[in-house]
Image (spheres, rainbow, N blue to C red):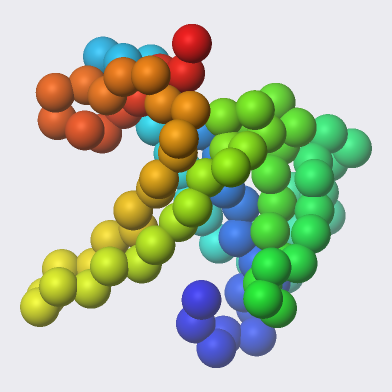
Length: 98
């Protein structure tokens, strides 16, 4: 997360996508969006000084995941590791949990 004081956390979730069913999402939560983003159906917690928002509906898909930030030369990407994933699509962008 950048040192921009307007950045107040991240929202991690899932979205219906791809041939396998879902993909992970991650977005910055900004100060002016906090009231709009905080919902009764969100889990909100700190992880290493980062405020994390997760919708309760996404919690089963995110429970137990590990997220790595990988920087390789000019490429930068977040890599998600979830032991509950049953299958990936061919391109590896979407997954399903049965």
